[in-house]
Image (cartoon, rainbow, N blue to C red; front, side):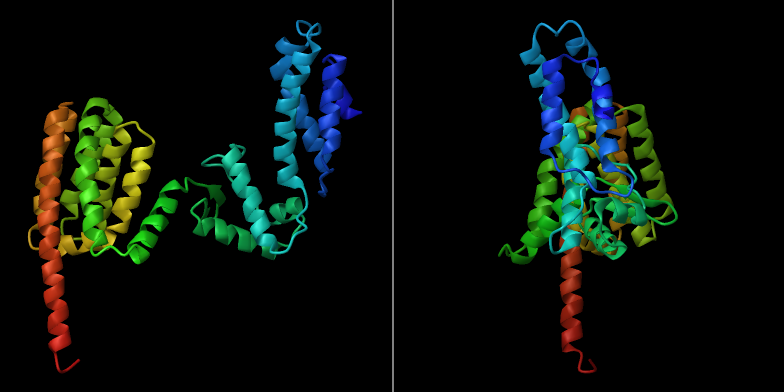
Amino acid sequence: MVLLLALGSYCSQCVLTVLSVYASLPLPHTRYGGHTNLTSSVSNERSVFNEQCFSKRVNEPRRCAAVMKVRCAAVMKVKWLMYSPIKSQRLYEQVVNRIEMLIASGELKRGDQLPNERNLAEQFGVSRTVVREALKTLVNKGLVEVRTGQGTFVVDGTSNALKQSLQMIMSFGGMQDPTAALVEIREILEPEIAYRAALRASSEHIATLEHAVATMDEVMTQNDAFIRADNEFHLTLAVATQNAFIPRLLDSIVDVLHELRGQIFEVNGGPERGQYHHKRILQAITDHAPEAAREAMRAHLAQVHQDSQRAKAAHAAEANETEGDPGE
């Protein structure tokens, strides 16, 4: 009855179509009455389609019904996936799949907070232990993060997925020197990133770059803090290109190279040389000079390449000394 009231303004064929779609889905089983949620969603659709279906489209029932069928089926499908009970084995994987589908469909977006553990257990018809295991899996996949005292939030898992893929390739890809290959990818990508950042960077991007450079000046002797600020600098350049793929791609490469970057930091004069080039790049971005930014980045990456060779040589020498030490 409530559903019929929600659709009261539509033509008769459209109402029949929606009811047929509704009837084709199994009723969700939740402690809160999942069918009410479905009805509410169809009611929301009504406001969107008033112009198409209230009076102007009464004489075009086929067109009206077709549009309503697509939209209402989509809404009902998502709500059914969210609230229907889990009946298969490996229940936590089924919960993971449901939440992944909600993220993929856009029903859950980056920054959205998931219901608490108890509510998720009730909505999915599973135990809290199952929900806990599912959330742990989603965290490992980089799709959600748990913030202490706040809850569980949807995050952008693209970079994490790329990192895992790169790590897998480095472990099993049969390459002689996968680290050198990733450094070369940076040499190919980042000069063009700097070029486009110089063309497109906003005042906010430039302010973030300035902050990162100032931070690196302050923490010149602190390995982790310097690398974090260095990451911020390079990723802000990627963001400034205003191409959504580039920050995700660069973040995955830079993160996998974290250990090498730590070794470069220990090379005598490495941080100071890096800062010299960072400031040149920053100046070119501030001046919106793309060619200068590209050349400054090429010079910086050449310096990084040289320092990485020094770091590898020092690391190899240290390993040889350790192997040759009879006291070990």
